[in-house]
Length: 335
Image 1 (cartoon, one colour):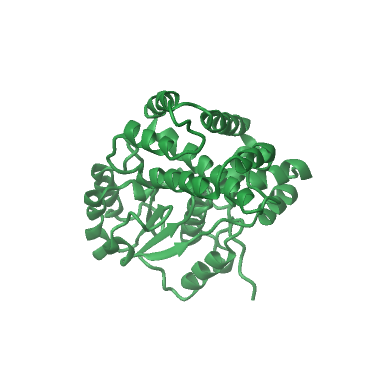
Image 2 (cartoon, one colour; image 1 turned 90 degrees about the vertical axis):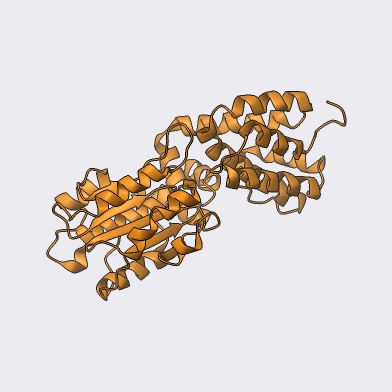
């Protein structure tokens, strides 16, 4: 018998795995869903929550998407759903926030079968803050479920990962995203193809960019900044570093985009230039590749990735940006 379709595009294996766990009554008390930003982690978490708390009498039809429980979970307004929030200034998931979540999830559900907490950006929690979750993971309250979201397990304590069932979500094929945009949302071939390429396999990004033109404008500005930065002197780059260091949260999407750009340059350097993610910048990618060695591009890519991975730590942001810019190619011998 075919399984009911969840409101999740792609990641069929993960959906089938969770469906089987529900059917066999083997739901874990904690899940850790990892994968790139906007790849579908929270969408999968919400779909799991909707399925577990759906009130449709037919278990095979859950989540129905029509009952009050499904609709309120989808809109983020269900009383038995708890969501963590990052600190607005530092971008950290603070220990006080985790303690607040654990105290709320310890309560009995108001109306649903399960009281569910989704802890977004759990990699932004420092070790002490992660420790605050251990007691709940070791002694979970009845009818409680924790779902942690993070880009990877690298910055997470082994005690966290060992007490959670880890689900790795990987970027989707551009063809998959193109099909969804064209078939389900009616986008033109050109628009669907561009967004699918630019998405980097992240369905959430593609769907958001489809309805928010400002995202593409911000992307254009971010890539323009990178391309303009390459011929700059050291002093000019350091001025940019000072400006960027004032918005730590804004650096996450910026560095992810720059990482994809350097990856494209690397592919062009290696002669693999038929399908770059930033396809609308092909001419500039090829120009940079011609004037830059593969080793220099690898250094830039690694420097970008290192800073991106370290953003959640307590670092001197301006200094870290300056160090990254010194590893970018095109810097004159004097400047």
